[in-house]
Image 1: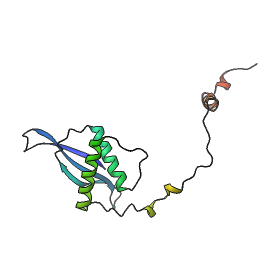
Image 2: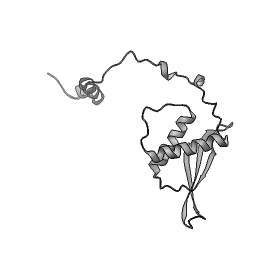
Image 3: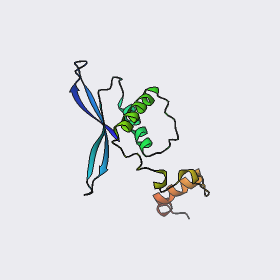
Image 4: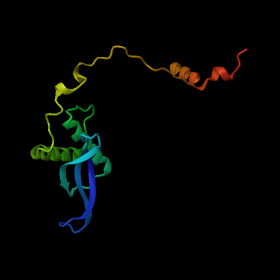
Length: 142
């Protein structure tokens, strides 16, 4: 999901402001990329930066796909708008919330174990750089 903005005259304030929609990209039956509006948001009274809008869209997408984030968002303004938009998405019924069911995942995140852990040390990186640059072929060691 992402935000799409068009500039319009806000009747309430009389100013030329951004009118927002939450949009989703998908592939239709012909394999072409299409877009559908998930939520007509309208004018946002809080001044949100582009980075904040991107975080809101990412968090909403993660909620829709039932992904858990490793990091908790600490910005109260972002969390406020995520809650408001998520409630509106649920109420509108524009998304099929059952699509991303836990049983549909290819990898069960709760059972993943990594047993063959290796560290990349300075020696290994130097060796690979040496091989990539073919330093041993360009120098004669006699």
